[in-house]
Amino acid sequence: MIPVTKRSSHSIKSILIDIRTILYAITFGILFGFFMNKGTVFVAPTIRMQMLFQRFAMFKMFLAAAGASMLSVALLVLCCSTLYGKILNNYIEHNSRRGSKRIEEFN
Image (cartoon, rainbow, N blue to C red; front, side, top):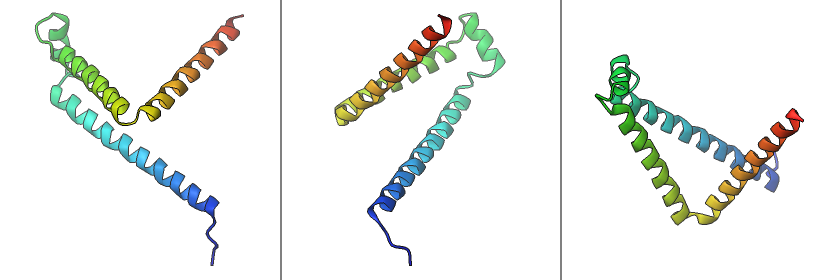
């Protein structure tokens, strides 16, 4: 019989969160692929017509993606503002570290 400690339950919780994150990524990837397929923005005639300003399917998909992104950020701010603040600060900190490393490489 294996004794269950508090540390192992924390690792189980961490594993379940990782699995949930992977399932979310797979689900949203499938949805993204489905909608890209439905929009037919990857087909050569659609791209050609977009470049000739005859069909704006790619532009509409871009605007829909930007709108969905803004809506998701707004909902995240309304529901979990502390979580959003934490994510945003970590993102800014990560990118500022990357930028400083690149500057050091050129000197």
